[in-house]
Image 1 (cartoon, one colour):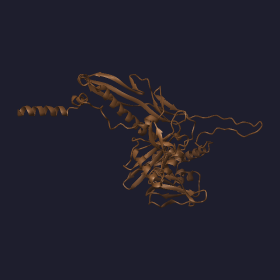
Image 2 (spheres, helix red, strand yellow):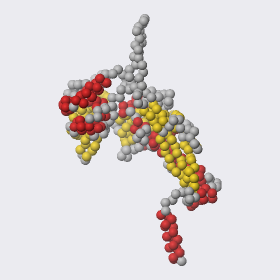
Image 3 (cartoon, helix red, strand yellow):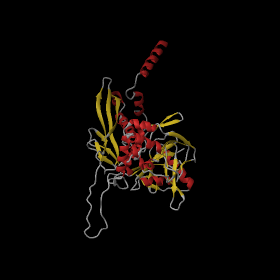
Image 4 (cartoon, rainbow, N blue to C red):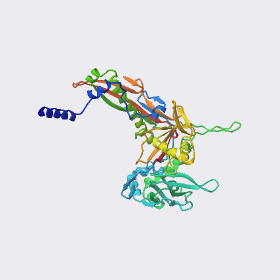
Length: 471
């Protein structure tokens, strides 16, 4: 008797060691007996991003965004490499500076990167003082600073907030500016890299290629352009009589951005024994498909927000990214974010914890935001713009996140979702389930796929409030 028991236990142990490829009958019986619910899934969220995006048909699998020609001045952010307490700038990342955008001489860039000197500032310290000689280029490796200048009546006012990867002093170098016209003070402890203007001039004297690049940059910067950096269109207005009208044309980008539809896929396996014997009162295949589709939709929303190629968090123009002034998201910060997408903003998206942090700041200041109705739900709003939860926006280091503001719609030059409908075996728009056959183990396989992408039609359709403290 003991031998039989050991044999059974050994067999069970061997069976448990095998990789399970489909739903077991023991689990399937849970749907075949007693009064029961459908299988529940805690991972299902409200998926507001998928619900608010206007979906545009990408019938060719690719969507091209044509724009007017813009003079991109290279307003990216610089990346650094930490080595313990020491920080150095990656030489190629210096090309994120407007003046060095497109410069490709790796030797010159490496020499310039090696001349930066690291400095540390405590919170409240002054990095540069207005009126002092503007004789250096400053890269902010870590921390947050305020750029302060005179207000309308001479009082100090915060002109801008700079943080990790930002910089200042590059324009002073190009324009030969003699003194600083603003003061920069550290809000938090800061680590910066500084190079004197004399070093920059020395590098120009040693490199003919760098000198020619700077001349092209200065010429390019003088091209007529509008407030958004787009090529200027000559017009005449307010004239009288037979005034000679200026000739013009609207130039386009030569290489516009193209968005290819991405895909999220999985293979669903269901044993034929389960589908045959345990299909009443709930269809096992349908329930498996329902939960699989829910998981695919969750992954789709995650990719639309976080994908490094087309995700919203990585496709916002750097001029559309701002920082909080004090850390937590305040009503003032939300107003600053609205200023980045001021033309018909549609919706804020934030992590639920970021929304809670904003609520705390409103309570602290005695401000009570109104609510608006969205699809039958009463949601918090700011200035009439709904603030919707999106758990796909990540929380960094457990205490910082981002808040996104969108303008949506093709006609409004906003943010749009991309998909292709009418695909074979389609069960939902842009999602299909294809039968793959039954293998020698009597397991039925289904390929479940969803195709999607997201496009930002013009830069000011998307704004991001970064480094929001939610602790």
